[in-house]
Image (cartoon, rainbow, N blue to C red; front, side, top):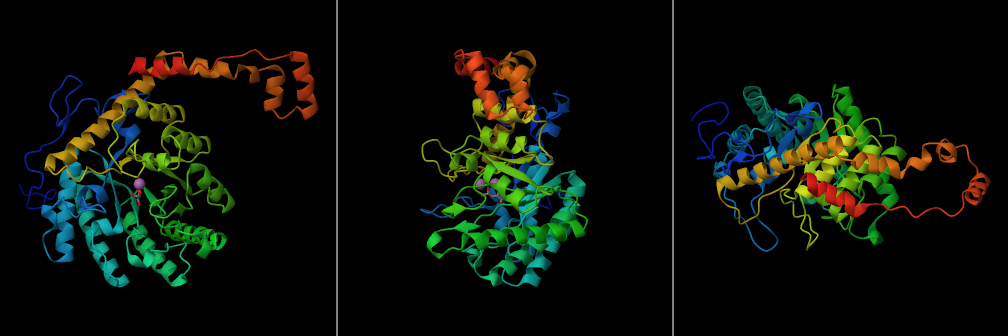
Length: 443
Ligand code: XLS
Ligand code: NI
Ligand code: NI
């Protein structure tokens, strides 16, 4: 099969176009819930979820872990010429994107093509692949959800990039961000992500935290100003994570980043790209992180994955828990959806998942669990007393003194007087088990 989509080689032989076949299908290479045209709460599933494939986990990650090397041997990784090898990888990537049927993809600069130490040469390489990607995007209709720069793998970034104590390293990070922004803009990327992989510290003994965070803010302003000057209209996303690889990362969680964006006057341009496994590392549920973001107008995009309940690491497994994802979708629907972003599967198949079809099973499972959860959440909101129960819990603020309090009209003395007048409050149930059962009933 030779085409603009697959080059002259088919990499995922034996797997065709993945189609929606419905819940009764027993075909493991079909969607049972993700019917992209199905309308839920006024939009199609495709529009609500904007699924994206992550270049790094699917086409770069080799299965290596700290205890063992590569188990995923990629047929697109064979040629010695850097550009030719990168083009093969892109052929494989677009073959996958097309077969899985997701509308978007995401990448880091160095996922697309290997970088060396020469800034000009790296730019030349990235630009060559951007030209190639333009053709692929035009032929397939697949779009770039977001681009980003990898400022954490190269050894020069071992003490961070924009928060590095050495200005010389910061400037290298800036050069890389400039090229990644240029690439994102050239490809019509809808958003640009900053995940601060090593923007944090290993020990406070050698760290001037105040100075580093000031540098981080200056760096983001410079990047944003450059992109806007080039006509970029999309969102910038910060992706919070509390730690790993650093002991402490400055973008700890949604609330921490909110404070940072407010303090440094970045609220107009930046929103959040939240990741499930980062939330759990921070000791939060993902729905908590989504709610914090939504309540502050920052719910931009989602990196979908899951951790492991027993070990707590950033294991980046594919999502599979319908109960949890239903809670995410309840927040999503009630907050009016994602602002500019989508659902990017920042997840990797296990190192012992070595069949070409495994990558498909993983993405099919992830898409189906999100689609099904969205449908369930919509049913809960439309058909159950869930919203009524939540509203009734706060009814005492809807009128009288409670309303006056919300309007800022009561003093501490007024509150004391009301307490005496109203007497001891009744004990009112929070109905948690009732609501948990309700969610399960709709599943
Ligand atoms: C790592 C992050 C990373 C970002 C992009 O934990 O999730 O993959 O999404 O740099
Ligand atoms: Ni992550
Ligand atoms: Ni991520």
